[in-house]
Length: 195
Image (cartoon, rainbow, N blue to C red):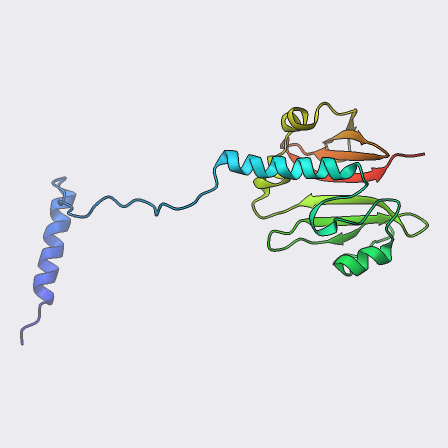
């Protein structure tokens, strides 16, 4: 039986030569388009970020944060309540950092908790999600804050980090949206108003 390899090599060489001469090779295949299916548009991403913003703002009036830590309340819930609801922290508090840190995964947000001398929550910090961040805190800018929940009651500068802190009074609590140099929210703090 005779080998077909020489014929294949000749055909390949001919097509390559025609292509190099600019004569091209006719294609009988249809255009190659990406598979069409559901995709997340920019407005959908922003809608999710706005939903998160409104949840954070509305629940701050009761001293709570949404989602995984819902029900844990600043100045009321204890360290034991936190550990019972979401487990022990991945990063315990340190002498130079009073926050117990919980890392998010699989679309869950990251949180941190600081406690007062009585063992009750003094502050809850929400870091949002790292995956699809644009659909969470990364989609919230100072303009979005202003459009959705109004002007901040106070705007503070954080010189150590070059961040800006947009503070909203929410009843007996303060909600702090800390905006990074990229002009998106880096994290959100919730604490009781100092008495």
